[in-house]
Length: 252
Image (cartoon, rainbow, N blue to C red; front, top):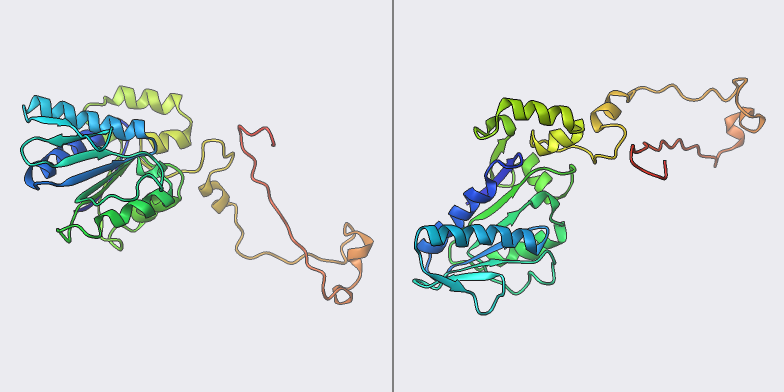
């Protein structure tokens, strides 16, 4: 019931999830399936997949009268609704199945507002699915993906090599054309720093020296004020700041 799909682009996350949403709606009368995403357009895309598959299966449905981006099954009144990316707009719903698409790019505030929609579900194991291609190593999707068992999620990680529809030649072409951090995120489904960062977290970590020798305040290069015995300045503190530049940042 608690599932994370951390997969590369074009792997089929939305297709799998749309099929699951339809199955849940058919087998749970009067169910409410909520779909959230970074934008309402993206959540509506997953809703359109559901509508397309329902037509293919010749399962009657109609537009939901109470929600402009929603559909309702004619047979058992189950609803599938696409929500906007706003914590205020996602309140007031009760769900029996919660789907968050592109979860790595959904703010924590939206997840916090959505999570209680499952609290009153008749099924104590009401499903919660998080699907996404990774972004920066922050937010609830990164947190749950880093320790899925601790948060009771079943975790799937699929890089581009696992997708049979994408050829090795295409993968190699993407590897050559995309920046390394972007290839890691979009194709290898790995969390990485922002594209504009000049140094990756791994490079910064490799540059760390665990043991540092204190400054010699009597060295010739130290200004006269600091060359005096440090005991004369009991309240004086020294700070060293490092600004890690960005490769596409005008301030740098």
